[in-house]
Image (cartoon, rainbow, N blue to C red):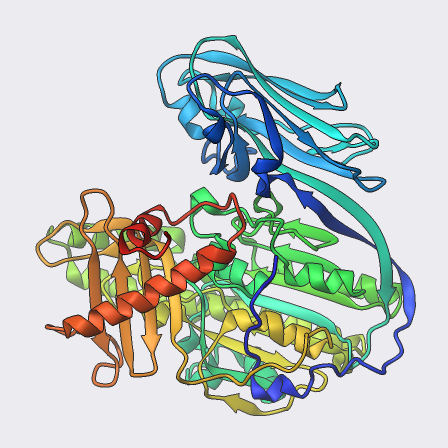
Length: 632
């Protein structure tokens, strides 16, 4: 899909186009995956031979994002789909697919199929040129075991799981046939992509086209970083990188939680554009152009090492990666150690370019390894300490009496445990820096370090992250260091850390022309589907869609669209007089509130215009925009 060109800081502007004139040396070959066509994006290309009972021709194919359940240990990820219902048959003229093309597909039900009364069996069939290439019989109804509430994917010899060899087929027919029962559950075919794999040159690295180490330290608050003002020596390795590169003092994440923010880092798009907004829309659409895809196509080998269970291949975050190693909250030393091992293997194989994405999660869990526990204030309580702290806060939010002294004691203990894990993640970063130095690759390696979001410790009445849009949650470090990056630059102008996408393209010579300058006057937008709305004297409202903007006039404005019986909510802070956003403006000017809501609505509507078809999320916001006339 086409993507807007985002700004790149002045310090990197001189790098644009620096690869021109440098002779590129081929050192091997890389397999590069390309989506030749996404059928999902063109339901109008399908001929409806038989519509599901109760559906007319216009709604015979519903483009949606569905998930069989929320069991993360099973194949239940939300996938963009054609929901055709039961008793349907549709056919697509595929034209002439390229040689070696495969069809990526999954079949199954949305979760509603297992919630309504009634049971049944449905046969899903996929035919290519009249030949049955895949079929599966799946049950629906509340009695179906959780282990059976999954997607089913083809597994054919010679093709990756979930893909079917096309063998030159020009016609695709999809059928759902009721074998038992008469229900009408959401029966769907997911993904529906024609995939081609091509060989491209693996090119030699140079200062003009360097290796890249892209590190995301999950849940790292900006105010815990030494070069951003923290006095506690928690991040000496990150601070050393900042001293020899560009350190952004005012970098902002797209969202206060992982899925939207990490998708923005990998695509350069804001969440309204890429659509990875909630559990119901957490699939990174293949139509998006990711940073590893851009680099791999241009001659970089690529690998990911992610310790966050949300950033995984089953959510399509592996696009463009030649390999993707998954962990679940593993210590940073283990993850960085594996990444360092991969870097050593690459170096021993030759001078080919490589890109390593390393997602560390130590600060997310507050569970430091033994070597870092002496930093904790008081005893090491493990996860039990956080559970007890959360329990006390939950009682407080319900208006119940709590032991405030114990809450304060636990808060200090957990904050120091968090700080210990920040130090542990920094040490893991140091392992990567040292590995590159030992291999003699420092002058040919670009480091990018940032965070997906921060963490709150009751600054605004809550704990954890995802629920609010205050600075402790959406301000992040952003450091770049490497060849041609100016040393010791402190960039004060506000930027969004998703711009790291374009900063990497600039530093590797892949950017498309000179970028505009960053503007301090530009508004900074934020969004979350996990928002919490707290009104005095009213019940706390959770999992709300909440959007916010920080303006050049020194305002923080937050808007939650109406949801069902819950009313719309807005709040305005004057950061010029209240930099910590501790007291909302008591009687904000109504015209200014309308203007800020209009600003947010136009930002969201602009994102919807480029969001890939079939990517869901934002139902309450869409309804609000419809009512306001932005999406008509």
